[in-house]
Image: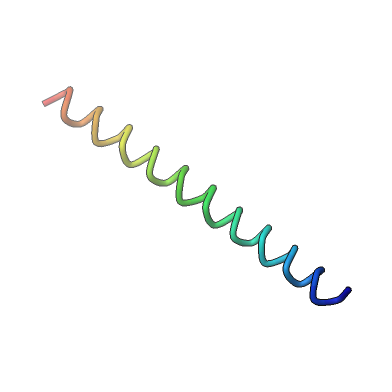
Length: 39
């Protein structure tokens, strides 16, 4: 029972990390695209 709870918390941490990475990559892509279009 306890092991399952630990696995759930690890999964939620993994999801948070994945979402933050996705947001950062999208933000970087958008800023790079804006810079390339302005130049």
